[in-house]
Image (cartoon, rainbow, N blue to C red; front, side, top):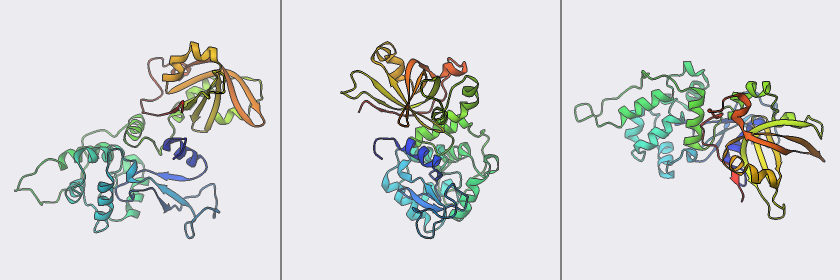
Length: 318
C-alpha cells in the first residue's frame, strides 16, 4: 500500500467520497472488490474512473484483511458459498473445515458474520445497512454462536441443522467495535477515532486538520490527531516531522530538536497527540511549528483515559 497504512488510505478514500464496506462472509472475496453502490456520492452520476456500468463504486474489503485468516481459508469461503448460502455459523464451520476456531472468532469480532443466514449478497447488504438494533445478529451474538458451533455435538445431534438466534449478550459499544476492528483488520470503515471526541475537542479550542487550512499564517493554534508518521530525515539537522490524522484530513507538524529532546517519550510513544504552536502556511503547505506537545487526553480532561484503546499504527523513522 506504499508509505501510508491501509487504515490511512481507507480514511482518505472515504473523505473523497468512496463508500467502503467491511469484510463480510456473504460479500467479500479474498482481495478487495468493487460493488455497485446506489447511494449518492460526491461524484454525482458518473466519474471518469468509474468502471463501465458501475455508476457509484463501493469498495468491499477482502478476507485478506482479517488477521490470521489464510488465503486457502478465504478462497474456500468464496468457493463454498457459491454452491449455496451459509444457513448458520454452524453450517459455515462444517462446510469450510479450513476455518479454525480462532478464524471464526476473529470473523465474528469484526462483524463479518452479522449477515450470515441471508440467501443472497443483496439480502446480506440490506441486513448490514439496517440500524444495529434491527440487524438479525450483532457481533456478540456471532461470538456466542461460534462457541456453540465449534463444540462437538456427538453422533445423536450431528447433522441436525442449527439456526442462529440472538444471544443474552449486549451488543458491542462503538468503542468496543472500534477496538475490535483495529485488532482484527488493522483499520475501521466506521468513524475515525477522533470523530468520537470532536465535540469535546472543539470546546477545548482544538482545531481539526481542515480548520488549520482556513487559518492565517503566524496564528497560534491548538491541534490534535492520531500520529500516522514520524520522520527525521538525515538532512533535517535534528528536526522531526509529524503527520497527524483526524476525520477531516492530515495535518503536519514540525518538532524542533530541543522540544524533541525534552518530550522524546511523549512524541515517540503516544498514539494521539495534542500540539500547540504557530501555524505556518508556505505556498499552500500548512504545518504547525510546535511549542508544546502533550498526550491528547489532556485536551478533554480525561488524564487517565485515552481517546481509544484501538491498536492504531504509525510509520516511524523509515
